[in-house]
Amino acid sequence: DGGITQSPKYLFRKEGQNVTLSCEQNLNHDAMYWYRQDPGQGLRLIYYSQIVNDFQKGDIAEGYSVSREKKESFPLTVTSAQKNPTAFYLCASNARQTAGYTFGSGTRLTVV
Amino acid sequence: AQSVSQHNHHVILSEAASLELGCNYSYGGTVNLFWYVQYPGQHLQLLLKYFSGDPLVKGIKGFEAEFIKSKFSFNLRKPSVQWSDTAEYFCAVGTNAGNMLTFGGGTRLMVKP
Image (cartoon, rainbow over all chains, first blue to last red; front, side, top):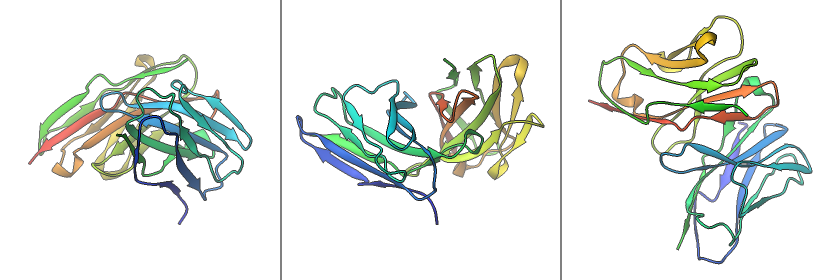
């Protein structure tokens, strides 16, 4: 079955360390997105990519970086510059807007 | 840029009560509208969507939503909720500017058995 795979499901990081969250899709979708979900704040867009080798900052891109070298993969790096990285991170993709998004199951990052 | 407002952050209902969750958006052009649901411990799933045609849209599990263009609204309704409807619900809007959706802040629904 086609879908989006996010790994790992849970991740612990020490302060000052960079960490990379994986997002892979086999849906042949052009567009991919990273959101951060915090209690009471809904989904906030970090980065998005509409096509391979191109990506754009979202509303809260500071302290994060991404790459899109392959259509299937859109990894997110949480850098040490991110002031409050503990959160639930969601990856999504779509082929066209009217179809809506397909979401991954998320990665819960905790900084210790 | 468009924005999406969900007025109720937390809703508590008893089983069999009727549900209406509000969603308003700000965008003057053509929109595509979505409701997503996130059950505890699960990923977000599409509940229903509207992009043209009949403004009353029926989704899964007995949910429906009505697009009222004059009010910029897309409220979610269910005549009789069940305990299993306990979840967080997100409204989302897309425009003809691209594939990206803008999400509301979410509404946490708790249904008491």
